[in-house]
Structure formats: structure tokens, C-alpha cells
Image 1 (spheres, one colour):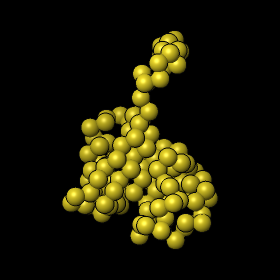
Image 2 (cartoon, rainbow, N blue to C red):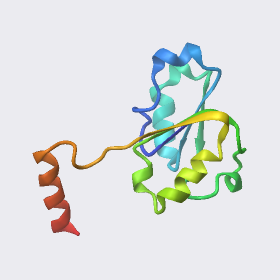
Image 3 (cartoon, helix red, strand yellow):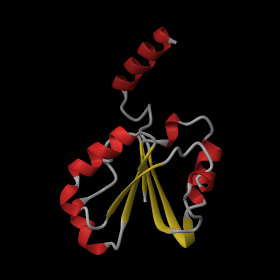
Length: 125
């Protein structure tokens, strides 16, 4: 499963399509899911696209606990209200021995570029 805010470009690699049984894309926006479905249409046999608000209880949204071997969260967790609660929601999907992969952009690793961004953000706060 991948949980995204966007078109899922950082979480699905078409080169692995023949190595997995199924791959579930989730996003809070049906529009982004439609774009991802269009982008990866040639792999539609193994792909599933479902709406999920990861800030809310996934079980209350119709998902099953312990149903995935791998969860990939790419550039989504930083935009949630509570990191602790969101990670707990992600973990509820994992089977015993499953893996949670988090990928987030962080400010600070790009030197001078980030200092400029930080100043720009402070002026708009």
C-alpha cells in the first residue's frame, strides 16, 4: 500500500509490477487517485485505488487491520495534524513482520536554498 498526497509518483515503480501480487494506492483526494490510475493504467491488473484520510481511523473507513506487508508513505505525514496518530494509523495496516517506509522532504539539508525558503515562510506566517 502507498499513502500519498499527490499523484503517487514517488511511491510506485513500474519495474516492480511483476514482483507484487497487488498494490493499493491511497489518497484523501479522488482527483489525485484518478490521475494516478491514468498514469499507471498499463499496470491496472495489480493496482487498486482507494480513498483514505490517514488522519482518521482507517478501520472506520472500511479498511482491514493487518492486511499489508509493506506500507510506503511518501511526502504525506508532514501535512497531518498529529504525526504520532498518523503513524499509528499507518502501522495498523501492517501484517506481523511488515515494514513501514516513510519518505519526507526535510528543510535543512539543502543549505542556502532552505535558508531562503525559511525566511520566505516566516514572512508569510
